[in-house]
Image 1 (tube, rainbow, N blue to C red):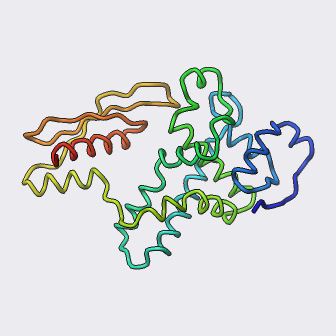
Image 2: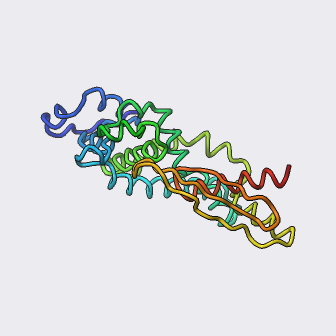
Image 3: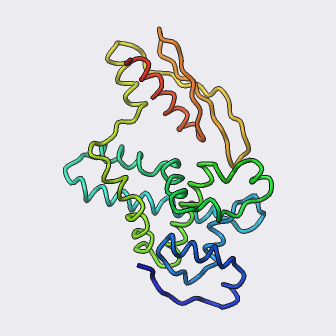
Length: 237
C-alpha cells in the first residue's frame, strides 16, 4: 500500500524527474513527503552533486536492523552464531544489487559521464549502495516502519529460502583444513583494479600441500569468499 503524505513545496517536486519520482514511489510503495530524498538517493558521487553516500550509510544500518529482528523472531531457538550467518548472507552487496535490479533501479540512476563509461550502471557496488540509499530515504521520510515494509516485501523470499543457517565458505574451508591437520588457509590480495566506484579485487587462497586458487570480487571480502568456495569445491571433488 502506498503511504500518502504532504508533498512539500510544489517547486521542489518540479525540480525532479517526474518519471523518477513516480518510479521510486511505485517501486518502494511509498509517497514521499520530501521527493528531494529520491533525487539524492539516486545520485552517484560522479555527478558532483549532493549524492547518496550519507543515505546509503543510514540504509545499510536500517537493513541490518530490520533483517536481524526478523531473523530473531523467525528462528527463536537459534544461537547468535547461526543468526549471524543468516544475517551476513542476506545483507551482502550482491543481494542488495539483486533487489535493485528487480525493482528496475538501473534506468533511474543519475551517473556522471565517466561513471557511465566505466560501467557503473552494472556495478553491484553502485546498485547495492543506491538500494541501501533508498532504504535510508524511506527511513528519513517516514520512519523505520516505511523502510521495514519495503525490506520485508523484497527480502521475504530470501529470508524464507534459508531453511538452514548457511555456513560461510571461509569457515567451511578452515574447518576442512583443521580436519586434515593442516594450517589455516592463507589469503593474499593479488591485485586491485578498476575505478573507485567499481573496483575489482583478485585474491589468492592457499593451503599447504595444495595448489592455490584465485578469485575476483567487487570487494576484498567478496573475492576471499569466492576463492574459499572455489578451493573447497576442488578439495571436496
